[in-house]
Image (tube, rainbow, N blue to C red; front, side, top):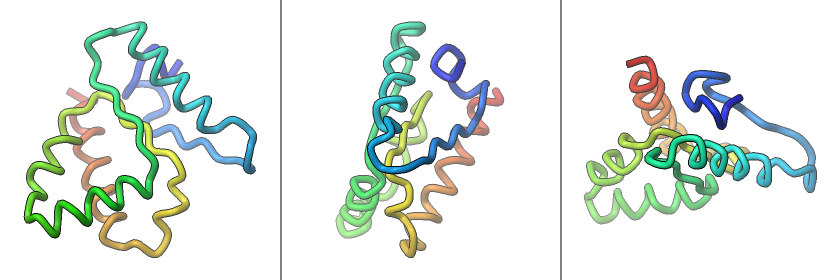
Length: 108
């Protein structure tokens, strides 16, 4: 359902469970189904710690606008290992901003 209608059904979708149960596989399958259903979609999969590193680099290089624009234009963001953002307040703030931007765009 999520792969067929990204941003419409279960927005956001939060998948949780123990190690090795297939959460990453399921998230990637959703992205692949979304791309199959609508080949023009902008789908991006990343791990939360990679998002954190990307944000740190954007801050260091004074390129937060480019960082925001990269994510602002997505139709579907698949963020894995969200638990790694615990205690990373700045990244959580950016993720909150990003979620609001994507949710607002989905409503249009």
